[in-house]
Image 1 (cartoon, helix red, strand yellow):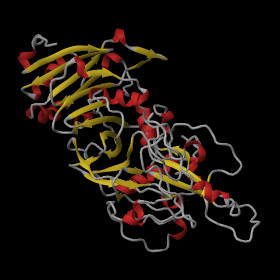
Image 2 (spheres, one colour):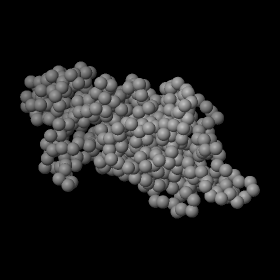
Image 3 (cartoon, one colour):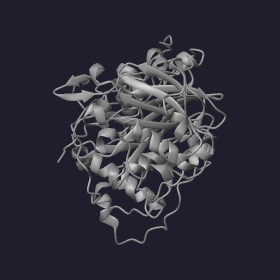
Image 4 (spheres, one colour):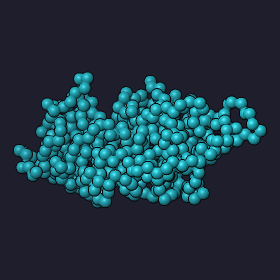
Length: 504
């Protein structure tokens, strides 16, 4: 029984942002729903990942939509597009090594800038539908799906009609359908033609679906998904918009703490660390949506996977938005909820640009931009840093300490996307990771004191609100990926190192 929840570097880049270790992608969460929305003007393109596991004949999808959709508004997508988006926007773990304090050349190398590169049909009402106050507005096939677009006069009639027609929907759907029916919402309803289903290892593999429509309201219908929820659920919403970051308008907003130094042990299970940090960020704030990423989609630094290319952006919606392939900001919003904490659909609003999670450590190992700061661009990411101080001999009279770079005397490893594990069996974190023992600094704005200094009084926790600090925004020689690009200093200084996350 299933009722799904949604139912090229263009100018010089700046100092490199670390050597990539791991990412907190969607495979971290056992009960995660991931969507991608593209928005321009009043047009919305909604892409829905299909993670259904079960007999295909039992599958049913019901998604409220604001208008009647036709066949040209609906298509299927390659499943890998979701792992690409997830990997690009997921929080990431990086590391720096202190270079030989006597190697003066490093300072000059760090100041180098890479040169610019080129940018890379109406249907008659179904039999008996009118008896339930239900109208079939459209009916068509898309790949393995049989789709109907419905309107309804009564939520009880809609519930009864769906069951009569063999749609396997959960019990208790009528009260949840009621506010949509009263608002005049239409319903995208899909079930599977078993003869068209692809099977892998005996299991049905259902294609992701994409729909597009025009509506002044920009929202995500999530209330129906509560009918499937058991325990905690993670909702990962990715929004692509022209030069624009988005946040929620009807829930609280927060930003994940970023540029936090962590212990070397975090590399063994970055997922547990990040889960503990996320829980601490939203503790006692059950209706808070956390921004984890806001960055130009054609750029990243560090890059756990290549930035989105024009073809992938077309897959996600630019093909019905004029085809413009540049200037799309990717926002990642993360909401963890239980069935009693999610009472409204998510409504989105435009938000001012923010930066955070960039820059190289200073000579003392400190990192700036740990909280969001106002800027003229969107360069915010959840980034966590392991530092390796120099342990070799010092052979000069005037050593320069605190110059950070890549692993000494090692070749550049091959890049690997953090999201490659999407869809693999994921462990469920027990939420008991000892966060103070995993961080190498205090995080006073969420009340975290690192274990070695636990006896010191901590500052009272505060909500994560953007800081206005013009001195920290520009970071002329230490800024990471400030402009659309393909990943900082690319092959010169950036290496991506993949370390498998230990799973239980």
